[in-house]
Structures are given as structure tokens and as C-alpha cells.
Length: 122
Image (tube, rainbow, N blue to C red; front, side, top):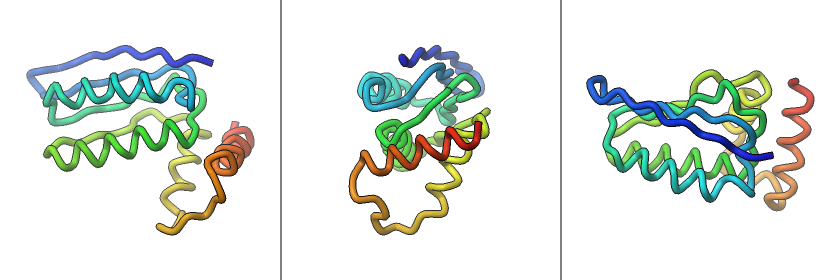
């Protein structure tokens, strides 16, 4: 599955909204990371990832999102995720509940777990 994105900006309100459609996974994460870096570099105060059409997110996609959130904080900006579908929301809830220590043996084990949780929540 591929990832399509569309960017809308509101310079007057200093908001960039990046609409995601498809899958944010190992295959699509590198290109998405580059695009997201460009969005952050534009200097908007609020950067929103609109996930209403996002069907799947893997650990690779989550890494990109969390890395960008950290970069945004350090630059005095904010990164937000909106309109998450229930199975995507479940992934974010799981990650909030995990302790800081590593719980999974490797990325594949984490992705298998996230796959199962997203499938169950659909």
C-alpha cells in the first residue's frame, strides 16, 4: 500500500496541515520523513498530521512521527495528530502505556503486535 499526502497551509494562523492517506510503513516512511522535515522547516507554529484517511501505521511510521514531534518541540513548534481512526488511535494509546524500556525483541515483533492490534480494532 502507498502513502499519499497533501499539504495545506494557513500562514495567517501559522498552521500547516498535512493530510495522510494510505499506509505509513517501512516502505513509505523515508519519503514521508523528508516531506515532514520540509513542512517543519517552513516554520509554522502548529503542524497537524490529519490522519482521517490513514489506514495503517507501522513502527517505522511511528518513529518518523515521534522524531518530528521532538524536533518541533525543540524548535518551539508543535506537532499534532488529528482525526485518528480507532485502530490508529489504539496504536497511540498502546505506545503511551508502554514503559520507557524496550518491550519488543525487534522491529518485526513490534510491527506484528501493532498489526494484530489494528486488525482487532477495525
